[in-house]
Length: 148
Image (tube, rainbow, N blue to C red; front, side):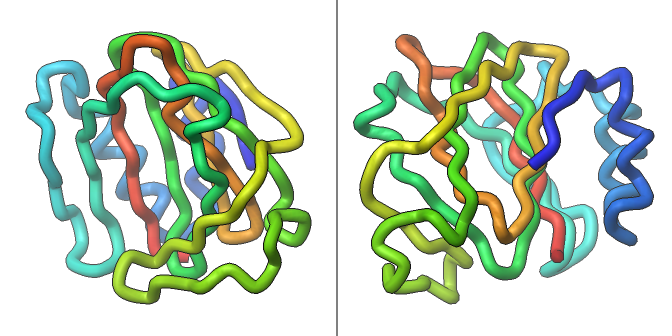
């Protein structure tokens, strides 16, 4: 997992061959003006989801992992709390994987929580269990899906 400010996003471009393209798009785009929906930058490999979440408590936020994609999550309209647990420690370890949606959901609360404000981002790799969207009012956010 990585947590940093958008000013430093370019420093992470070397982590994955597709990160450079994602960084170029994010830097060149007025993210707040994007409508809820999806922008495909590279078919099946690099997708920008613009989402509006509803309110969610820590108890309602389910831990999840992805096998095929890395998430770059960027809150736009407000502060978002995201849970974190190493994937190997998520319970139950035998949760069913949904290959169509590239997601496994787990039970229980995250072991740690991070606060991500507008102007910041969090990167979650396949080994990172995360419980995003914890906010009392909901948040508009960007979720970049990068093929791992």
